Amino acid sequence: MASAVIRRHVTYEFERYLSVRSAYGASFGPEGERLSFLMDTTGVPQVWTLDSPLAWPDQHTFYDERVTFASFSPERPELVFGMDEGGNERQQLFRLDVEDGTITPLTDAPEAKHRWGGWSSDGERFAFASNRRDESVFDVYVQGRDDEEAERVLEGDGWLEVGGWSPDDSRLIVTEASSSFDQDVYVLEIESGELTHLTPHEGNVRFRSTNWGPDGRGIYLVTDRDADTLYLARLDAETGEIDVVEEGSDERSSSDSRASPGDGEWNVDGVRLDEESGRVVYSRNVDGYTELTSGELAGETTIHEFSAPDLPEGVAGGVSFDPDGERFAVSATGDVENTNVYVVETETGQTERWTNAATGGIPRERFSGSELVRFESFDGLEVPAYLSIPAGASEENDETPAIVDIHGGPESQRRPSFHPVKQYFLDRGYAYFEPNVRGSSGYGREYTHLDDVEKRMDSVADIEAGVEWLHDHPLVDDDRIVAMGGSYGGFMVLAAMTEYPELWAAGIDVVGIANFVTFLENTGDWRRELREAEYGSLEEDREFLESISPINTVDRIEAPLFVLHGANDPRVPVGEAEQIADRAAEHVPVETLIFEDEGHGFTKLENRIEAYTRIADFLDRHV
Image (tube, helix red, strand yellow):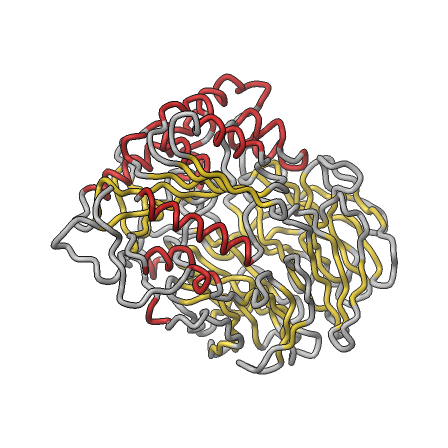
């Protein structure tokens, strides 16, 4: 098509960008001196520890498969970690002795998922939820650290998770999800099996990020009950009464140039409470940027705030307190900051980076930041997006190609975090546009439901409006705009290419949905009901689901298409990729890449290098 992509005088291969490492998922050891975390130095996340800031870390696991989490025992130098196989998401649990390196399998049900529920306070037991009895539902189990078998303490009939042990280890918080935006909270008496439902309600209400209070009489969580945004609340563990602790708004940010939509009202999107000390950390999602607040309980519904930590501007989370609550570890990232673990003095806010995840030899100043922008959609709705412009692009011409990268979910949100793929394409001269179309989370309940079921294609229309906004940008070449997205974002790519075919120079569909009917028929039994709550049901909405499926309008696609997938994908089965590639190839250039050892996305370094190098080559040829 038009002129060549603008490049700087020095370029790095894609492998260098994909070798930028991340350190995250920290957990303090029982003495408070040692910190475990996950880091992908070997190409997939493994367990590492260190005992001082920026010290040389020790690697403890050496698998070809990804480790998904690690949680230190509160009493011993050991931790539990999770690992699946080939991206199949059937996580198994293992115990690691960090002193002698011994690894003991704790579960032996390779066909089932195991969702970690935490250690008891004495470190003698742990809890988890699993669908080992029936693939479509999750039960709750408790297992002794030395036991080979777990005891099923609650038989579920839906999607259950364990939210934590009570301070006296006699009860568990259990949450049940009916959809991504509708949960319930229960308390389970382990010995008797008595289950108390604390949150009966009608309609969709979120209850997330549950923590026991120090006295065991209250549960601290975030919810949007009777509100549009999530707020921090205390839930009485006996009566179910809910009291507001912190509202879901932040006046400090209402005058910020980033603030809106929402008029300064933003979700409290997570909370972490230390049962022993009453220290607490909670986060607000302010237009995608994390604002972290630390303090301590000064009453059941009052928090005495401490000084704010000094973290990179961007996204932070995954808080873990040390044993006395004096410090907490948190993972943080930003546009130009790869993910690292920081340790914060809880009271003073003094912050120190502990990990040193490498940048692949690329100077940090090479990375480009983003600007938060807004565009108006077809119905007047303001849609937020992040726009990144490559260095050296000049407003004297409009020859800059652009990639429109659409997030999955759909109840997700593109946020200002480090993204090596984005940085590579910026370095190659592409502009990068990341819209949070209607249906995205982070902007309140109403915004999130604007794409439900029959309104699904309104979110695709937001993409069209975003591209029209790009057409007015003085740098962007209207004829060289690429659609790229993964999972639900892959559906959005295909839908945008069939609904608005004239807008695109190329499309990249990564593990995307091509046919909602076959997707719902073949996705994992454990998640079908959750997805039908968002997309519509096979029984009642089949005709509508067929009408919005890109496979049924594939003949409208005009641009070259690259389809990538993992053969072990339990969420969006690989058949979605196969059918769209076969049909589209009848009239446009199509490339297909299927990884036999991957699932819903690509985690192994060699596969990521092949996938994104092939994508770059594909775009070089067609854009």
